[in-house]
Image (tube, rainbow, N blue to C red; front, top):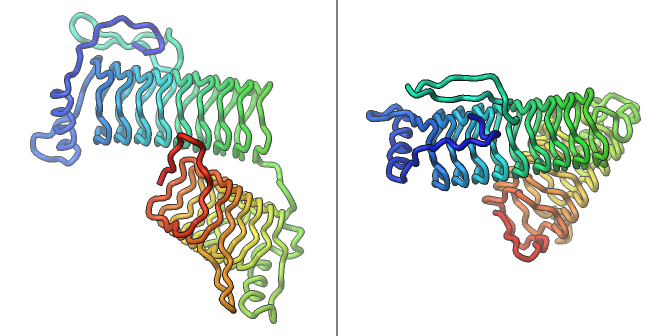
Length: 417
């Protein structure tokens, strides 16, 4: 039976010994070892148990009560969580790719940073056992999947089906919801600030009083969506933002070629271009592009592949680099003050100082930049200026922060690294 309805059914409690044995057997099953067996706990009570970090991909938890369970970093890909009661569960960083979550209740659950690629969260149906133990599926007569008050910040819901989901006041801040199906979803007063809703289907959705500030909604479908009172300040959609590329007077390919020649010859050949305030989203992948010292102030580069780009000393103040791939890019001495880098991939990027003649050096300026959920693993940030930067949920594992001016964190908060 869906957790969306009151269900007084007694579910046999699973003990820790039984659970640990089941996890061990399931991991053997996953590794195709002798003695392996798939975990199947149907209509059982696993409330408040710890399964953190376990590999339970493909396990069957149909109809289970899992209130308050610790499933942080657990692999639940392709798991059956049909009609499960997961209220208040800890699913931080859990993997739920292609999981069956139809009819589940996730009210108050913490799914911060969880991955739910192609997860099925449509309305479920009623599942009941008869006295012989057989499961019977009945016509839906319950509430939709319940995400009310859940924490989904920075969760990856790419391609997930949340049609009809009840997610009023749910926190989807900076979540990746690309191609997500949200038809008829109740998102009233939901927090979708900074979320990437590119290609999402929000037809008939209730977005009354929702916060969509800074969301990416390129290609999103909003037919018959209710938007009264929604905060859409700074939303990036299909409309052009800033100057058109035609302002350059030549094609973007020609402009980049001439600019690279200008850089390579110290201004003797080629041509200097002003790329500021341009909407560059349509230029396609530009791995290794040469934009050394370029003026890109206020330009829109959201979602671009700029892997290994040469952008030393570039002026990127207030630029929009959300979802951009800057992996391995050379950004030494760049000015990124006020830049929007939410979810940007900066793994192994060089954000160290740019050394000039006479012993001068210019550190990267990331003051007031938005680096929420950005991936900075392995990045060089030596001497970087990050006053007032927003690093919420940013990944800093292995980053070189030598002499880096990090922002002050509010009392009671810890820096994640």
